[in-house]
Image (cartoon, rainbow, N blue to C red):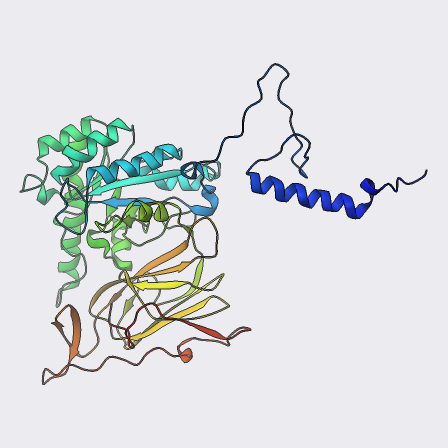
Length: 436
């Protein structure tokens, strides 16, 4: 049989046609069009009686990534006020913009207790979903947020600590019952909202007794209100260590929320679910960036998640699949050393006693940043700490402020650098890193 060697059927030309078709289809944002057949995507002509549909531009608010790539975001709100008076307060107008974006993008809103089951179900990974939470039982949630949530038919969870109910600026038990009757989820935020970290000199017995009140007595009180089992717990301030996770499991909780940045996926521990705080400084663009954040796989984390650090100085590091773009420690930009194998490091630091959160970001030109976040507990180094100005400072026995540690160097990284060596990412102007 003779081969067709006409110009249009030459292999090189057929290949060029396919390439041009792919590029044209990508540019127009379509899967196919008359006269152009994309590989693997045959053109489906419209029915004969149907009117030809004119091309419609794709709205930015309608584009979303598959859930398997982006994960499930959980947002943490506090005050909703017409005139915000603190750093965790936003206006009702901005909250309504958040809800409009979620509605336009087709998001399903989940209660806090529904998140783990949703993540475990593979059928949900291509469905955009979000969880909205409101902490502390502030009266403005009832007067400002609840009407908006009902208008847009969206679910939300209120994390409540019983000791505050009926106090100034908080809901009463009667008002909380009204929220319950409207169908909103109510879960536990401890009894007192006190720090759950061990107090100085606190015995193990005293610690466990205090934790039982914060985790169990509070749950019992809320269950009498809701008439339903309380399954989820939100750590006050997001502070937690491994022993708190163990105690929650021991006391029958199956779900717990931090305020570590990033989103959740099927690999997230249900007792360490991430929540992204909404701050007064965040505009709508910041909300959308958080909404579009995707999970970032990290390994080689130091200090490890939920561990306790007692030796100083501390170098914070992690390894990601692609080079790290930036790192924050307690939501403040850090000075980072990073190489093209994805290893990133910051430090050394002399950390103040308490809980610290580390967030690593990678921005690789995709639809949204990829983020990983974890937390650890610092016992404080042997030096004495004093609060000087706006920062914690180490002082010696004579009260003299000790110097900051040296700026991080490539030697802070472990292992051999990859091709191209190390690159320095300086994210703030001071020469030496301030303590987080």
